[in-house]
Every structure is written in structure tokens, then in C-alpha cells.
Image 1 (cartoon, rainbow, N blue to C red):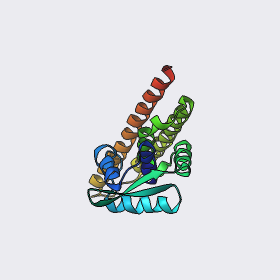
Image 2: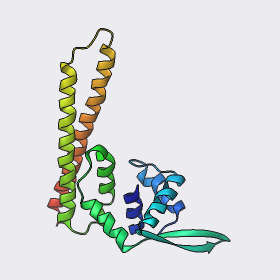
Image 3: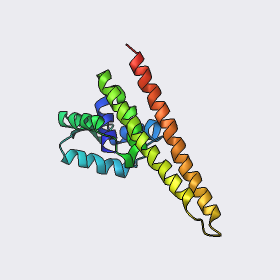
Image 4: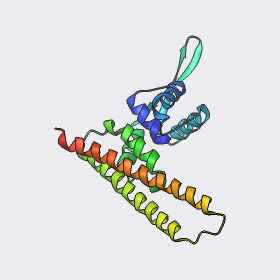
Amino acid sequence: MEYVILGLLILKSQTIYELNKHFETSISLFYSASYGSLRTTTNKLLKKGLIHFEERKENGRNKKIYTILDEGKEEFFKWMYSEVSQSKLEVEALTKLFFLGLVESNENKKAILKNIIETTDVEKDNLENLEESIKEEKIPDGYEDIAYYRLKTLNYGIQSCNFSKDMFEDILKELEESK
């Protein structure tokens, strides 16, 4: 969540309320947040010296407006260029895609997309290997339904990897074909 907040603050300084609205309206597809988790994360970012806030009074109410610092921008872009975590592949890939427009260089955008594609390939291979090992298991009597739906769940993961890889490859191709 830290990187999502940093990315949103690169776009513009915001209150917790505004950050929450972004999560509800555009980011909820791949990331959910509550006011409590947003407060906790902004406090973490404040302690790390990545953001700061200014208090303003509007309509008789105090508002904290959060702004990203240069250190926060550096941390955000360091994360954008880092390897995608296999254990958080879908969330990280979609978060990086969401903020890819903040990356100025097309070469850097391509590198990020290639990393996502490579990590997706590794995940797909892992799931296919797991599928094969499950298929080779001797299923005890009475557990056939459990094994069947376990394989269907794995099949979902494999198909999701296929879709994701195709989508990111299409985006990469568009980027390579653009001027």
C-alpha cells in the first residue's frame, strides 16, 4: 500500500479522504484499503521521511494535506524498477501498470513490462508443475471431488497467468511500435 500512496501523491497532494476515494474508484480492482489502513500507512511514510503534511482549516475543519518528498519519489521509482515479487505478482503487476505513465523513459517502461512478463512465466511454470504433481498423486477413495476442484483452482491460476502475460505482451508491443 505504501507504493500506491506514494504514486497517488506524485500525481497530487491529497487528504486521507481523497486517497480513500482513489482506492474506492480506481484502485479497488487490485487493491483495497480502509481509512484505518490508510492512516497507518501514511504515518509509516511520515516516520520514514517520505511524505509530509500541512494542516489547513477549511469550513471550520482541520485538514491534513499529504505531499510526497523527493525521498518518497526516489523510493517509489526504486520500487517501480525493482523485480516483481512472485508472491505478490498480480497486485504488484497491476500497481506498476497503473503508475507506468509516471515513468518517463520508454526503455524503462519496457524493462518493467518485461520483468512482469518474465515473473508471470515463472509463476505459470510453477503452477503447471504443481498441476502435474497433483495429477500424478493417488487420490484416496472419497476425495475425488476435492482433487477435482483443487485442479480447477490451479487451472484458474494458470489461465490467469496466460491472460496476464498476453495482456502485458500486448502493452509492450504497443510501446515498442509507438514513437
